Image (cartoon, rainbow, N blue to C red; front, side, top):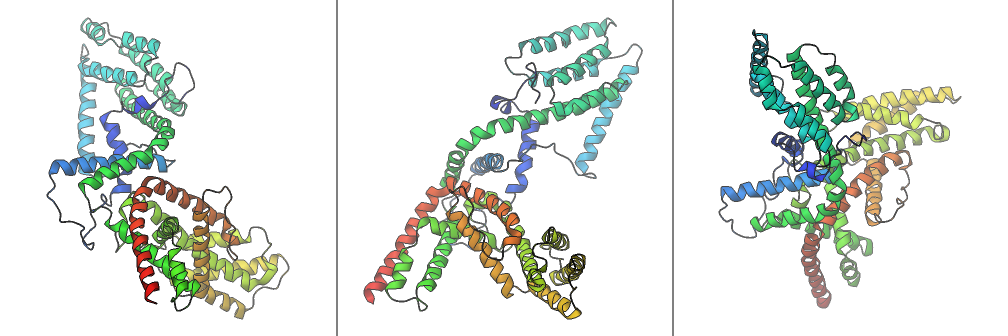
Length: 514
């Protein structure tokens, strides 16, 4: 917003004053994030902890509202780029056609009234009243001078008297409105205000004024959101936890998926540590390994499992449901990064030390991979064909770069070998892919374990060419995980307390038997 002291600055209190239309727009802007449905609805394959009880329509509506409010607060805090945007109707939808017809009828009626002799100003005065309300809505309590100006100039009773007596100068009123809009608008809207001054016909001018007022309302709402974000971040964890608890009280089995998710993570970690201690997983070593499990380690393992999730066939755990889209985006980014790292590794291995230190070569290979693997997660995408195209492009780039720097280009045999290695990355069991994948997972695991430290963990060998991309994903991923922990850790601790106690008692029993 403008820094002019007479220009209003939005605040938390302004957010509560948003009109219904803005609230609907604010709600619509996050519906894509929560459309998968509220937690607890995907339960067909989950054993019920208790018999379902009848739920009234009022309870359902109240629960849905609570989940939506929680999702909204979460979206504002987690998404730094969150903005309210005007709702846009589909181009050929019935709603848009009806809206356009109604608007055209209104503006045609206004134009007909103003062309009468003498002119009729009924519609114009109603529009001035709406404009007055909009301008006043942009003010804070301290803007007394501006409020007085708007109230005095746009005095509807006086305007009606002037219209009845044939003394109304509507052009003068509109000129005042445009000047006041210029005072109140954000600097980004100065160009739109300037264009208003170039419109001479009154009906198109009124239409343009309302269009700019809508933009100003969006600016005000977004400024209000950005203003409350720091305060919201301090309280959002507690707020989300409270809202989730309210939902949990109405739906007692709303942690079933979370329990299964954490149980699987604990089982995976116990098996992994068991393998590291003794191949046959028996004796005191197994007991010691399993008993070393702690809540934090299991939670970190559980969050890593979200990056390999089957989103089509398996419901997402309830406590991370609002972030399912974000975790899925990170998962897709990592899958593409895995192929990129594999292509770079086999390329540098095939070329030897000749290309390692050439500036810009790795970036060119990355660009090739990104372009040709765009849409790799669509059902129609053919990975084998795309990797074949990647191999052709990479070989051409390698030969060009080698020739430019005085090295011998690849022979036909070496080209065939490199292309074959790149195409082999389509196989999930490819040794190089599995190596890169395990090292990426290890890096993310180390980052989760050391997320409270300022420095990032060391990049494992072979991941140097994709270090920047991996670190960017890791920062985004760990920020998401840490916030989720902050909100839901009491629930995780309670569930894991039971899981780990049960496993420990079982291990103690096995140890006594042996």
